[in-house]
Length: 115
Length: 110
Image (cartoon, rainbow over all chains, first blue to last red; front, top):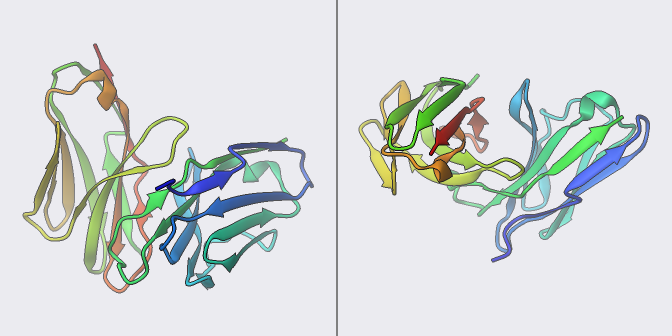
């Protein structure tokens, strides 16, 4: 099992540029989560998908953030335009649908730096 | 709103010096309490799930316990490879998400 795969591992961009983060969940996992981690706020949930459908996006900070899950094996998180305060580590995590108290499996994260 | 508070923020131990990490939580109804380990530059890695007060789970030098208000992660005779940030998270009844604490960073010196 390859685990949750995220790309890129590191992204450095300038303020105002569009950033797209990518995630491939574990095969057979139908629930997908995007989290953001900072020193100040720790791990924060941004959005949750179940069976490719966004269920809760209340954690998405602003309209500049959007997420999609076109199929069971791929999700993107887009920031447009990016700002320096978006600098953080973004994690994707997945788990099996129906096992709502089953553990989450996390990817290695994308370290985003917006200059 | 679910709240998770971990203490201490940082813990420096000598190899072999046992200690405990605390996770205090407030949740309307607990579905599960999770412990994760996070190494620098990596995503959190699952350690334990606890479901009810009085439950205990062990893995190598780690033992997690749960009461109605808090959980402890005991590290017995730690080794340098136990150095990491340990995260606690709760999932409420009828909820899907995990709410995380800020973590405790443990450093074990040889």
